[in-house]
Amino acid sequence: MKPRIFSGVQPSGNLHIGNYLGAIQQWVQLQDEYEALFCIVDLHAITVAQNPEELRRRTFEIAKTYIALGIDPEKSHIFVQSYVKEHTELAWILNTLTKNGDLTKMTQFKSKTGVDFEESEGSVSFQEMKERFNSVGVGLFDYPVLMASDILLYDTNCVPVGDDQMQHLELTRTLARRFNKRFGETFIIPETRVLQDGSRIMGLDDAHKKMSKSALSEYNYIALHDELEMAKKKIMKAKTDSGLDITYSEDRPELKNLLTIFALLEKVSPEEIVLRYKGKGYADFKKGLALTVFSFLEAFQNKYATISDEEVRKVLYKGAEYASRIAQEKMKNVREKVGFWQ
Ligand code: AMP
Ligand code: TRP
Image (cartoon, rainbow, N blue to C red; front, side):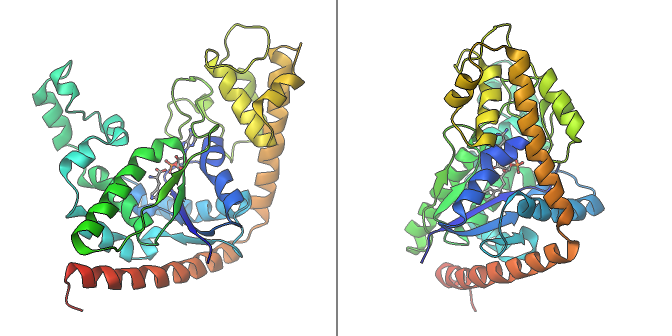
Protein backbone atom coordinates (compact mmCIF):
# COMPACT_ATOMS: atom_id res chain seq x y z
CA MET A 1 0.00 0.00 0.00
CA LYS A 2 1.23 3.49 -0.87
CA PRO A 3 1.56 6.11 1.86
CA ARG A 4 -1.09 8.81 1.70
CA ILE A 5 -0.88 12.56 1.11
CA PHE A 6 -3.61 15.10 1.74
CA SER A 7 -3.68 18.78 0.94
CA GLY A 8 -6.13 21.54 0.09
CA VAL A 9 -6.68 25.08 -1.09
CA GLN A 10 -9.42 27.51 -0.08
CA PRO A 11 -11.82 28.63 -2.81
CA SER A 12 -11.62 32.19 -1.56
CA GLY A 13 -9.86 34.05 -4.35
CA ASN A 14 -7.74 33.82 -7.46
CA LEU A 15 -5.01 31.22 -7.34
CA HIS A 16 -1.59 32.65 -8.08
CA ILE A 17 1.78 31.23 -9.06
CA GLY A 18 2.77 31.18 -5.36
CA ASN A 19 0.03 28.60 -4.71
CA TYR A 20 1.26 26.60 -7.66
CA LEU A 21 4.99 26.75 -6.96
CA GLY A 22 4.69 26.36 -3.17
CA ALA A 23 2.02 23.69 -3.03
CA ILE A 24 0.33 22.34 -6.15
CA GLN A 25 3.51 21.68 -8.17
CA GLN A 26 4.61 19.37 -5.35
CA TRP A 27 1.26 17.58 -5.46
CA VAL A 28 1.67 16.88 -9.16
CA GLN A 29 5.08 15.36 -8.54
CA LEU A 30 3.93 13.28 -5.57
CA GLN A 31 0.79 11.74 -7.04
CA ASP A 32 2.63 8.70 -8.44
CA GLU A 33 4.47 7.87 -5.28
CA TYR A 34 1.56 8.45 -2.89
CA GLU A 35 -2.12 7.79 -2.71
CA ALA A 36 -3.29 11.36 -3.04
CA LEU A 37 -6.36 13.23 -1.78
CA PHE A 38 -6.74 16.85 -2.83
CA CYS A 39 -9.50 18.86 -1.30
CA ILE A 40 -11.17 22.19 -1.98
CA VAL A 41 -11.69 23.51 1.51
CA ASP A 42 -14.90 25.52 1.32
CA LEU A 43 -15.62 25.16 5.05
CA HIS A 44 -12.39 27.02 5.68
CA ALA A 45 -13.28 29.67 3.13
CA ILE A 46 -16.50 30.63 4.96
CA THR A 47 -14.53 31.64 8.06
CA VAL A 48 -14.61 35.00 6.29
CA ALA A 49 -17.83 36.15 4.59
CA GLN A 50 -18.29 34.79 1.06
CA ASN A 51 -20.87 35.48 -1.58
CA PRO A 52 -22.71 32.12 -1.90
CA GLU A 53 -22.94 32.05 -5.70
CA GLU A 54 -19.32 33.08 -6.02
CA LEU A 55 -18.21 30.46 -3.49
CA ARG A 56 -19.96 27.71 -5.45
CA ARG A 57 -18.45 28.93 -8.73
CA ARG A 58 -14.95 29.26 -7.27
CA THR A 59 -15.08 25.82 -5.66
CA PHE A 60 -15.79 24.32 -9.05
CA GLU A 61 -13.12 26.44 -10.74
CA ILE A 62 -10.48 25.31 -8.27
CA ALA A 63 -11.27 21.69 -9.10
CA LYS A 64 -10.82 22.48 -12.79
CA THR A 65 -7.61 24.34 -11.96
CA TYR A 66 -6.19 21.31 -10.12
CA ILE A 67 -6.77 19.19 -13.22
CA ALA A 68 -5.38 21.83 -15.61
CA LEU A 69 -2.22 22.09 -13.48
CA GLY A 70 -1.56 18.38 -13.81
CA ILE A 71 -3.45 16.63 -11.02
CA ASP A 72 -4.55 13.49 -12.80
CA PRO A 73 -8.05 12.40 -11.69
CA GLU A 74 -7.18 8.85 -12.71
CA LYS A 75 -4.46 8.80 -10.06
CA SER A 76 -5.60 11.31 -7.44
CA HIS A 77 -8.88 11.92 -5.66
CA ILE A 78 -10.26 15.45 -5.85
CA PHE A 79 -13.23 16.42 -3.67
CA VAL A 80 -15.04 19.24 -1.90
CA GLN A 81 -14.61 19.38 1.88
CA SER A 82 -18.19 20.28 2.84
CA TYR A 83 -19.45 17.33 0.82
CA VAL A 84 -17.91 14.91 3.32
CA LYS A 85 -19.69 15.64 6.60
CA GLU A 86 -17.18 13.78 8.77
CA HIS A 87 -14.76 16.75 8.59
CA THR A 88 -17.01 18.86 10.80
CA GLU A 89 -17.84 15.98 13.11
CA LEU A 90 -14.20 15.25 13.83
CA ALA A 91 -13.49 18.98 14.21
CA TRP A 92 -16.05 19.13 17.03
CA ILE A 93 -14.44 16.22 18.83
CA LEU A 94 -10.95 17.68 18.43
CA ASN A 95 -12.25 21.02 19.75
CA THR A 96 -12.76 19.32 23.08
CA LEU A 97 -9.03 18.53 23.18
CA THR A 98 -7.91 22.00 22.07
CA LYS A 99 -7.01 24.82 24.44
CA ASN A 100 -7.74 28.43 23.64
CA GLY A 101 -4.03 29.06 24.10
CA ASP A 102 -3.23 26.58 21.30
CA LEU A 103 -5.18 28.84 18.96
CA THR A 104 -4.27 32.33 20.19
CA LYS A 105 -0.63 31.57 19.40
CA MET A 106 -1.28 30.74 15.72
CA THR A 107 0.67 33.23 13.60
CA GLN A 108 -1.91 33.17 10.83
CA PHE A 109 -4.69 34.00 13.31
CA LYS A 110 -2.61 36.80 14.80
CA SER A 111 -1.77 38.36 11.47
CA LYS A 112 -5.31 37.99 10.07
CA THR A 113 -7.03 39.50 13.09
CA GLY A 114 -4.44 41.70 14.81
CA VAL A 115 -5.10 39.75 18.01
CA ASP A 116 -1.84 39.08 19.81
CA PHE A 117 -2.04 38.91 23.59
CA GLU A 118 1.73 39.00 23.97
CA GLU A 119 1.73 42.34 22.25
CA SER A 120 -0.81 43.74 24.71
CA GLU A 121 2.08 44.21 27.10
CA GLY A 122 3.68 46.52 24.53
CA SER A 123 2.17 49.05 22.19
CA VAL A 124 -1.47 47.91 22.20
CA SER A 125 -3.46 48.02 25.46
CA PHE A 126 -5.09 44.92 26.92
CA GLN A 127 -8.48 46.63 26.57
CA GLU A 128 -7.91 47.20 22.83
CA MET A 129 -6.75 43.60 22.37
CA LYS A 130 -9.83 42.29 24.16
CA GLU A 131 -12.06 44.34 21.89
CA ARG A 132 -10.29 43.00 18.81
CA PHE A 133 -10.62 39.43 20.07
CA ASN A 134 -14.29 39.83 20.90
CA SER A 135 -15.08 40.97 17.38
CA VAL A 136 -13.38 37.99 15.65
CA GLY A 137 -15.60 35.11 14.43
CA VAL A 138 -15.29 31.79 16.27
CA GLY A 139 -14.80 30.03 12.92
CA LEU A 140 -11.67 32.00 12.15
CA PHE A 141 -10.30 31.21 15.61
CA ASP A 142 -11.11 27.52 15.25
CA TYR A 143 -9.80 27.25 11.67
CA PRO A 144 -6.69 25.15 12.55
CA VAL A 145 -8.79 22.50 14.34
CA LEU A 146 -10.86 21.94 11.21
CA MET A 147 -7.62 21.67 9.26
CA ALA A 148 -6.33 19.05 11.73
CA SER A 149 -9.56 17.10 11.15
CA ASP A 150 -9.10 17.22 7.37
CA ILE A 151 -5.72 15.62 7.75
CA LEU A 152 -6.29 13.12 10.58
CA LEU A 153 -9.54 11.80 9.14
CA TYR A 154 -7.64 10.12 6.30
CA ASP A 155 -4.68 8.62 8.20
CA THR A 156 -2.53 11.04 6.21
CA ASN A 157 1.20 10.34 6.24
CA CYS A 158 2.38 13.52 4.61
CA VAL A 159 0.97 17.01 3.91
CA PRO A 160 2.59 19.02 1.09
CA VAL A 161 2.03 22.76 1.71
CA GLY A 162 3.69 26.16 1.63
CA ASP A 163 5.66 27.13 4.74
CA ASP A 164 2.88 29.38 6.12
CA GLN A 165 1.05 26.17 7.10
CA MET A 166 3.82 24.62 9.22
CA GLN A 167 2.44 25.84 12.53
CA HIS A 168 -1.01 24.47 11.69
CA LEU A 169 0.61 21.11 10.98
CA GLU A 170 2.39 21.24 14.32
CA LEU A 171 -0.98 21.71 16.04
CA THR A 172 -2.39 18.82 13.98
CA ARG A 173 0.32 16.55 15.39
CA THR A 174 -0.28 17.82 18.92
CA LEU A 175 -4.01 17.08 18.68
CA ALA A 176 -3.36 13.62 17.23
CA ARG A 177 -1.01 12.83 20.10
CA ARG A 178 -3.46 14.13 22.70
CA PHE A 179 -6.25 12.03 21.27
CA ASN A 180 -4.06 8.92 21.05
CA LYS A 181 -2.89 9.37 24.61
CA ARG A 182 -6.37 9.78 25.99
CA PHE A 183 -8.30 7.23 23.93
CA GLY A 184 -5.61 4.88 22.59
CA GLU A 185 -3.76 4.74 19.24
CA THR A 186 -6.17 6.12 16.63
CA PHE A 187 -4.46 8.71 14.47
CA ILE A 188 -1.28 8.66 12.41
CA ILE A 189 1.09 11.55 13.18
CA PRO A 190 1.45 13.30 9.82
CA GLU A 191 4.62 14.88 8.45
CA THR A 192 4.79 18.28 6.80
CA ARG A 193 6.39 18.53 3.41
CA VAL A 194 7.60 21.94 2.29
CA LEU A 195 9.96 22.73 -0.54
CA GLN A 196 13.42 24.01 0.21
CA ASP A 197 13.07 26.75 -2.41
CA GLY A 198 9.66 28.07 -3.26
CA SER A 199 7.86 27.26 -0.03
CA ARG A 200 7.38 31.01 0.29
CA ILE A 201 7.06 32.97 -2.93
CA MET A 202 7.20 36.65 -2.12
CA GLY A 203 5.19 39.56 -3.56
CA LEU A 204 6.46 41.09 -6.80
CA ASP A 205 5.94 44.56 -5.35
CA ASP A 206 7.39 43.77 -1.91
CA ALA A 207 9.84 40.90 -1.36
CA HIS A 208 9.34 41.05 2.40
CA LYS A 209 5.71 39.88 2.27
CA LYS A 210 4.51 36.63 0.76
CA MET A 211 2.65 36.66 -2.52
CA SER A 212 -1.02 36.74 -1.56
CA LYS A 213 -4.36 36.71 -3.30
CA SER A 214 -5.65 39.25 -0.82
CA ALA A 215 -2.83 41.73 -1.49
CA LEU A 216 -3.90 45.33 -2.02
CA SER A 217 -2.14 45.76 -5.35
CA GLU A 218 -2.58 43.37 -8.26
CA TYR A 219 1.10 43.96 -9.01
CA ASN A 220 1.81 41.78 -5.94
CA TYR A 221 0.91 38.52 -7.66
CA ILE A 222 0.55 36.71 -10.95
CA ALA A 223 -2.82 35.00 -11.01
CA LEU A 224 -3.13 31.78 -13.00
CA HIS A 225 -5.93 33.43 -14.95
CA ASP A 226 -4.14 36.72 -15.58
CA GLU A 227 -4.25 37.91 -19.16
CA LEU A 228 -0.94 36.97 -20.74
CA GLU A 229 0.08 40.53 -21.62
CA MET A 230 -0.80 41.68 -18.12
CA ALA A 231 1.35 38.96 -16.58
CA LYS A 232 4.29 40.09 -18.72
CA LYS A 233 3.74 43.66 -17.63
CA LYS A 234 3.72 42.60 -13.98
CA ILE A 235 7.12 40.91 -14.38
CA MET A 236 8.62 43.91 -16.16
CA LYS A 237 7.32 46.15 -13.35
CA ALA A 238 8.44 43.84 -10.52
CA LYS A 239 10.52 45.63 -7.92
CA THR A 240 14.28 44.99 -8.03
CA ASP A 241 17.32 46.49 -6.33
CA SER A 242 19.66 48.83 -8.16
CA GLY A 243 22.37 46.22 -8.86
CA LEU A 244 23.58 45.52 -12.38
CA ASP A 245 24.36 41.82 -12.46
CA ILE A 246 22.24 38.74 -11.79
CA THR A 247 23.20 36.90 -8.59
CA TYR A 248 21.31 34.66 -6.17
CA SER A 249 21.78 35.83 -2.61
CA GLU A 250 19.92 36.49 0.63
CA ASP A 251 20.75 40.19 0.59
CA ARG A 252 19.06 40.68 -2.76
CA PRO A 253 15.59 39.40 -1.81
CA GLU A 254 13.71 40.80 -4.84
CA LEU A 255 16.09 39.20 -7.31
CA LYS A 256 16.25 35.98 -5.29
CA ASN A 257 12.47 35.72 -5.46
CA LEU A 258 12.38 36.24 -9.23
CA LEU A 259 15.16 33.68 -9.68
CA THR A 260 13.23 31.19 -7.54
CA ILE A 261 10.10 31.64 -9.67
CA PHE A 262 12.14 31.35 -12.88
CA ALA A 263 13.96 28.21 -11.71
CA LEU A 264 10.86 26.45 -10.40
CA LEU A 265 8.89 27.11 -13.57
CA GLU A 266 11.73 25.78 -15.71
CA LYS A 267 12.46 22.94 -13.27
CA VAL A 268 16.17 23.84 -13.06
CA SER A 269 18.31 25.23 -10.24
CA PRO A 270 18.56 29.00 -9.63
CA GLU A 271 22.31 28.70 -10.28
CA GLU A 272 21.58 27.53 -13.78
CA ILE A 273 19.52 30.66 -14.46
CA VAL A 274 22.27 32.84 -12.96
CA LEU A 275 24.74 31.24 -15.35
CA ARG A 276 22.42 31.83 -18.28
CA TYR A 277 22.34 35.57 -17.54
CA LYS A 278 26.02 36.00 -16.76
CA GLY A 279 27.20 39.33 -18.13
CA LYS A 280 23.63 40.42 -18.89
CA GLY A 281 21.46 42.93 -17.05
CA TYR A 282 18.00 43.13 -15.51
CA ALA A 283 16.21 43.98 -18.74
CA ASP A 284 17.30 40.75 -20.44
CA PHE A 285 16.66 38.73 -17.30
CA LYS A 286 13.14 40.08 -16.86
CA LYS A 287 12.33 39.54 -20.53
CA GLY A 288 13.43 35.92 -20.21
CA LEU A 289 11.38 35.42 -17.07
CA ALA A 290 8.35 37.10 -18.64
CA LEU A 291 8.58 34.70 -21.56
CA THR A 292 8.73 31.67 -19.25
CA VAL A 293 5.77 32.91 -17.21
CA PHE A 294 3.92 33.63 -20.44
CA SER A 295 4.42 30.08 -21.76
CA PHE A 296 3.45 28.53 -18.43
CA LEU A 297 0.24 30.55 -18.17
CA GLU A 298 -0.62 30.00 -21.81
CA ALA A 299 -0.29 26.22 -21.47
CA PHE A 300 -2.33 26.25 -18.26
CA GLN A 301 -5.07 28.45 -19.67
CA ASN A 302 -5.33 26.43 -22.88
CA LYS A 303 -5.62 23.19 -20.92
CA TYR A 304 -8.20 24.76 -18.59
CA ALA A 305 -10.34 25.73 -21.57
CA THR A 306 -10.49 22.13 -22.81
CA ILE A 307 -11.84 20.63 -19.56
CA SER A 308 -15.62 20.34 -19.58
CA ASP A 309 -17.83 21.11 -16.59
CA GLU A 310 -19.31 17.64 -16.96
CA GLU A 311 -15.90 16.05 -16.51
CA VAL A 312 -15.19 18.10 -13.39
CA ARG A 313 -18.56 17.19 -11.89
CA LYS A 314 -17.82 13.49 -12.41
CA VAL A 315 -14.37 13.83 -10.85
CA LEU A 316 -15.80 15.59 -7.79
CA TYR A 317 -18.54 13.00 -7.21
CA LYS A 318 -16.10 10.16 -7.61
CA GLY A 319 -13.59 11.85 -5.31
CA ALA A 320 -16.23 12.50 -2.65
CA GLU A 321 -17.37 8.90 -2.78
CA TYR A 322 -13.83 7.65 -2.29
CA ALA A 323 -13.07 10.11 0.51
CA SER A 324 -16.40 9.40 2.25
CA ARG A 325 -15.65 5.72 2.46
CA ILE A 326 -12.37 6.34 4.29
CA ALA A 327 -13.84 9.09 6.46
CA GLN A 328 -16.87 7.04 7.53
CA GLU A 329 -14.77 4.11 8.55
CA LYS A 330 -12.42 6.33 10.53
CA MET A 331 -15.28 8.06 12.32
CA LYS A 332 -16.79 4.73 13.33
CA ASN A 333 -13.56 4.00 15.14
CA VAL A 334 -13.39 7.50 16.64
CA ARG A 335 -17.00 7.36 17.90
CA GLU A 336 -16.30 4.00 19.48
CA LYS A 337 -13.20 5.33 21.24
CA VAL A 338 -14.88 8.50 22.49
CA GLY A 339 -17.80 6.49 23.89
CA PHE A 340 -20.66 7.48 21.61
CA TRP A 341 -23.62 5.15 21.39
CA GLN A 342 -23.84 3.68 17.92
P1 AMP B 1 -4.35 29.25 0.40
O1 AMP B 1 -4.39 30.08 -0.81
O2 AMP B 1 -4.09 30.04 1.64
O3 AMP B 1 -5.50 28.31 0.52
O4 AMP B 1 -3.05 28.36 0.23
C1 AMP B 1 -3.00 27.21 -0.57
C2 AMP B 1 -1.62 26.60 -0.56
O5 AMP B 1 -0.70 27.49 -1.22
C3 AMP B 1 -1.05 26.37 0.84
O6 AMP B 1 -0.32 25.17 0.85
C4 AMP B 1 -0.15 27.54 1.06
O7 AMP B 1 0.89 27.27 1.96
C5 AMP B 1 0.39 27.77 -0.35
N1 AMP B 1 0.79 29.16 -0.56
C6 AMP B 1 0.01 30.26 -0.45
N2 AMP B 1 0.71 31.39 -0.72
C7 AMP B 1 1.98 30.98 -1.00
C8 AMP B 1 3.19 31.68 -1.35
N3 AMP B 1 3.22 33.01 -1.47
N4 AMP B 1 4.31 30.94 -1.57
C9 AMP B 1 4.28 29.59 -1.44
N5 AMP B 1 3.18 28.88 -1.12
C10 AMP B 1 2.04 29.56 -0.89
N1 TRP C 1 -5.12 26.15 5.67
C1 TRP C 1 -4.71 25.82 4.35
C2 TRP C 1 -4.34 27.09 3.59
O1 TRP C 1 -4.88 28.14 3.82
C3 TRP C 1 -5.77 25.07 3.59
C4 TRP C 1 -6.07 23.76 4.20
C5 TRP C 1 -7.21 23.40 4.88
C6 TRP C 1 -5.24 22.60 4.19
N2 TRP C 1 -7.14 22.11 5.28
C7 TRP C 1 -5.96 21.58 4.89
C8 TRP C 1 -3.98 22.34 3.67
C9 TRP C 1 -5.41 20.30 5.09
C10 TRP C 1 -3.44 21.06 3.88
C11 TRP C 1 -4.14 20.06 4.57
O2 TRP C 1 -3.54 27.03 2.72
